Length: 333
Image 1 (cartoon, rainbow, N blue to C red):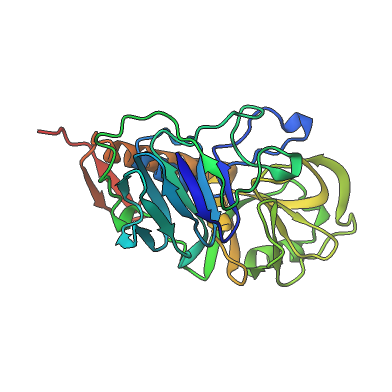
Image 2: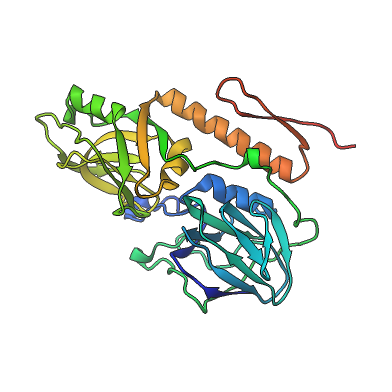
């Protein structure tokens, strides 16, 4: 139902990822920025985990071979039949229409969701692409994709106000982490360095992991190497070079470098959307604080979903404290 005319950069089908296969060595994969991806799905009336297109930096050109409703998530220019249309908004496309998605002005990953999702045959319970294990493939010009069934009426015209959109434009971002579990492999000075210095995202970063450059983190006499043990997306490993590596969605399931911290799940999209040359600072939080950050984020996402579905039609911005967005449930007249 859609055909890819131009694919200028990495373009893959992703959903929320594979669950239950890490014991077999299969990474989770899935959305690099699950916050933006889920909002793109909500804009077209999909469940948050529906398969969609994820593009790296520059978006594709797509021709519709049937009517569809779509939405583009990202700080990016979008055109339909050569006419600019808004991102973070759902639009109706007719048979023969051409969608052009430009280059992201900020952030690294963008998303294109279609009502009904992208139809695909799940591999190990997911449609997410992981080419290294031959689980799907990177998309190319000429590829055609089918869309799932969806009732399109009422799905177009949904709009996410700017104040509710994620902002990844800062050149230096703060990322909250839970320290450990391998702190005995680092000196006190090394831990202090990790929490006080800023680290630059290097070009040697991808969906598997983000390599950072900056002041070396000092290991203790126990050294950088450990007996291989499980690791998760968000784990911060520090090899002998002292330069940290943040493991991402396609990360291997085990690793043999000392772990200094794990990124709070709520802040993984912030890491994912950091371009090479941009900087990260790490702030230590407790396990309970990291859990509360995730709970707060999920409540906001669910409120945004209900807002787009018309179940909530009022919201306000609260400038006090960390809760920047507060929704008010108001019965529709």
